[in-house]
Image 1 (cartoon, rainbow, N blue to C red):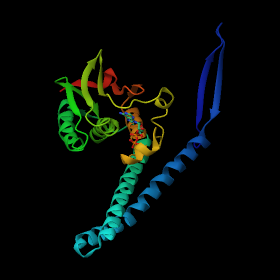
Image 2: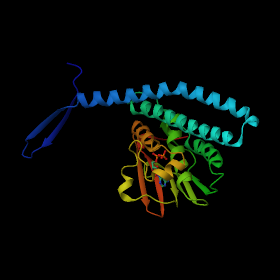
Image 3: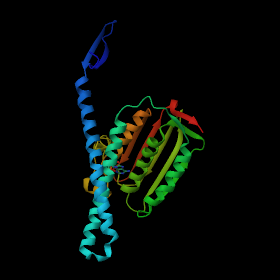
Image 4: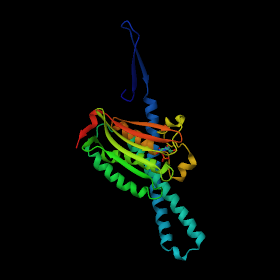
Length: 262
Ligand code: ADP
């Protein structure tokens, strides 16, 4: 039966004895696949009503001069919530896409210094309110093999989190360096930090350390779950080191076989 998936594990009992453990994981995989499909379908179905709602909200806003101030305010709140839901649906669709293993995708040579220059320019807009001092140390000529959109979104996610969660006027350092024979991208901030018990759970779907703070920043708790899956495709690792009330450092370490010169 080709539907059965077995997980095999050899255990060494010494003196040349081996124990073979076989576990039937087909059901686990099937349930996981159903969950993924369900989330993807629901998210997809939500897109149309959201687009319709946005259309009407924009129509009312365009004619805003005839609205009493309290209705104007109500429409602005609805617009904000529609945008938030839009982002959430978009992230759920991205997550269900990257959760599927795509090992066989062709990897391109990515010019990371160029990608990061663009990212820093874009961050300027995100940073207008918080006015952090953002600095960068970027190694020239250091690239990787990867999937363009996925890697850009992983880098962008770590930087936008640092901007969002660090209190106003903070310091953020973005760096891209050789790391032995590997390569490492890091975003370091002097923000609120994360308690050790939360650090290991950050990449779970919908996990947010401080729900109210996160909601204020428009966060959904899906960003790092997406990053984790993207990095899994790239044979790269997310390393988080954080000290409560002192700051955090989020790094992505790319294995030697992904590193290339550009
Ligand atoms: P969200 O959409 O809520 O930002 P993420 O998955 O990107 O979701 O992040 C999960 C949680 O990790 C956030 O809600 C936040 O509490 C915490 N977090 C992420 N980055 C930082 C950071 N640089 N400093 C402090 N907390 C952070």
